[in-house]
Picture 1 (cartoon, rainbow, N blue to C red):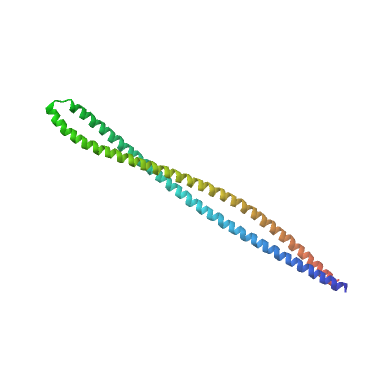
Picture 2 (tube, one colour):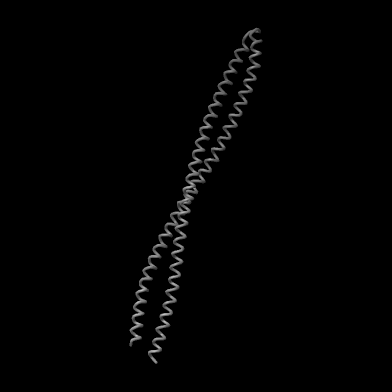
Length: 199
């Protein structure tokens, strides 16, 4: 009778140990799945970081193009201003001449007025172009700043995920060691149970 009770108690202990091992294995499997999910997330963040870096390089190239356009527009404005000053000096000299020269000066004045109007229009267009270029440069700088901020955030997130992944790997290693210890304990319990049955 005592032997039967002992066997029943041993069976109950083995069932409890088996249930506990099953629960432990399920937790270990869930931890391994989380590790794989974190690794996939790290790879995705790496790809996004590469795309953000490429977009930043494209934006910088566009900024350099806008800067070059601004330089050319400024040069055109300077040329137009110099031409306008030259025409003003020519008109001043024409007014000091006699009547015969004044008739020709009137013609030159009319031609100068037309040229001045065209030059003023050119200057206005150059100023408008320069304003547009400056606005584009400002927008490009803002966009470049946002891209750099996004790249910094991606780097931070990547480092955080790497740290978490390292911790998860350490926990997985600890769980493996525990599983090995419990397996050895299970072997000892089985041997003891078999010894008790033989007794």
